[in-house]
Image 1 (cartoon, helix red, strand yellow):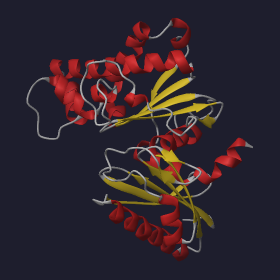
Image 2 (cartoon, rainbow, N blue to C red; image 1 turned 60 degrees about the horizontal axis):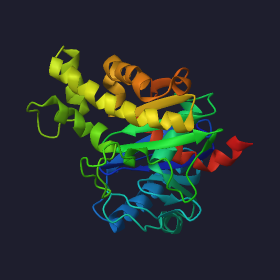
Image 3 (tube, rainbow, N blue to C red; image 1 turned 90 degrees about the vertical axis):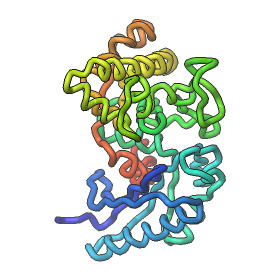
Length: 310
């Protein structure tokens, strides 16, 4: 394999695993790996340092060098400081972590940090399902619901980096309690666990959307109904977002991207009820293309965003 001399490192921090790798400036992935997420802030930062060493060693062995490191992190991230300034319920004690300073000290490289859903959105927009579009709403559904917004080819982070938190928009004022402290947040009605809940029958412990999707493929009527229920709730959230943003495309990733025609068809159909004709008539609702690599890829190429704008 012929490898570029200059590589970009990406780290995608999740509540369960850390995915990391190296890519070139054309978004070609040349190395990937993952490791279980540490149980504390100190453990995770130590892992980051070890990951940086691993990636630099790999590059050196192939006559290349790592130019920068990008990190996609849960929580609200001040991208100027590279610091987590808002809550991150799936990574305990992560709020307040100065990722940039810690990792630059450990690696000696320039570090860029952004919210994990934002880097996913950037990757899908530049190189995936949204390529060629100027605007888009990018959603990833898993343990919760993450989202990123691209407007005029730029990520919209909000005035204080807290924008695009679609998962914490309220669809039921007296609804299910959310980890964020509010009630009735969208993500509690559409996350991976919601499928088993709507199924209404006993399922294997820890089962999420994948198990229900498999049952639906076999014609299980209750599974099909569960998928449609979760999809309709997501359509409610997307409908409100369409009225505000009027994007060209809505890209949905995470485990639910495997939902196929039942899931995506239900969303498209229900949007006719939950969004005006003007906002829904031309928008495309499509599955993400980059899969589990999107977060790592988007993080790695964060330093190139300035070039995209030129």
